Amino acid sequence: IQTKEVLPSDSHTEASAFCHAMSPSHVLALAAQLYQRRPRAFSASVVGENFNHGESLSPAVEAALPTLLARIEQLSIQP
Image 1 (cartoon, rainbow, N blue to C red):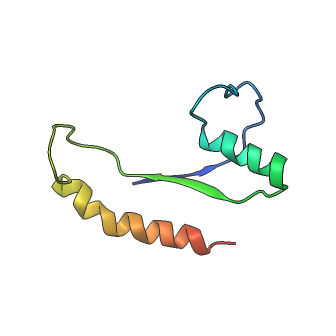
Image 2: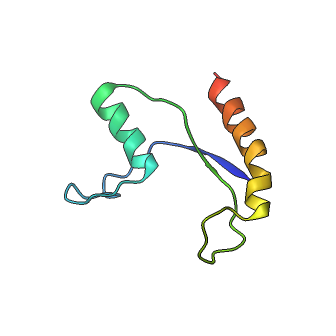
């Protein structure tokens, strides 16, 4: 399980005005620019193990979900 705080980008060249994708850092920078808000943001992920096609999670990922959810909960209540 990996968690990382996402910080606003200070680069204006990160995303074009004509693209359909922005990084989380760029979205945070826009929130600051447009709304004068600087919310804390985090990226949370579980490292993949098996990338074969299927309809369910691997046992390792399924076992990691309770820990991941607890970590997200913990991050959401931090000031």
